[in-house]
Length: 96
Length: 93
Image (cartoon, rainbow over all chains, first blue to last red; front, side):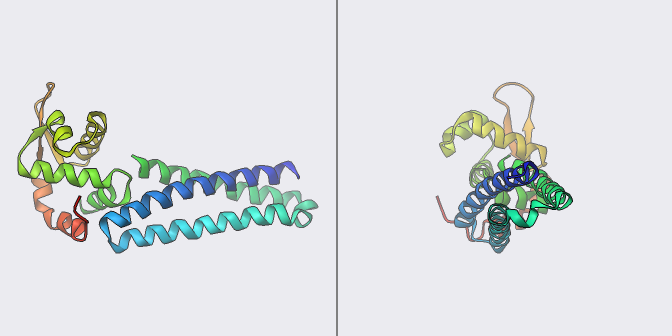
């Protein structure tokens, strides 16, 4: 696999872990508080989780698609990286 | 303050224990040690929650020395309704 796509896959993998942490925290809080706000947070985290899992699937199954397009690979890696930073902040304030 | 209450109680990991701290201090002011005992939570965990709650003006500390008592702020009293809304459907522990 090309290195750039490997980087993008790593980001997507970490994002899945962060989103799993967030989902677990928010589901626990929903069980405690039963307010609609948390249902929204749970839904948000689950969809993002699915989105990252789908991205991972694409990275592994459609290597050919990215193979001859280094600029696409870079864009994909940068997007995953930015999402990682965003989720890192969200996880940090949620764990506090 | 309303948003802080939602964030601190509902959005974060320690929400449940923070509610229990607020309820416990609503009965009467206590220091960190007494709180840890009252709600049966580890002392250091209680200290962390107290810090967060003071930082967001929900609690205030009476004095600086060891064993200082914690009180609910006037600002919290003004927003008590939000607190009631947040914990409305909370399951009793």
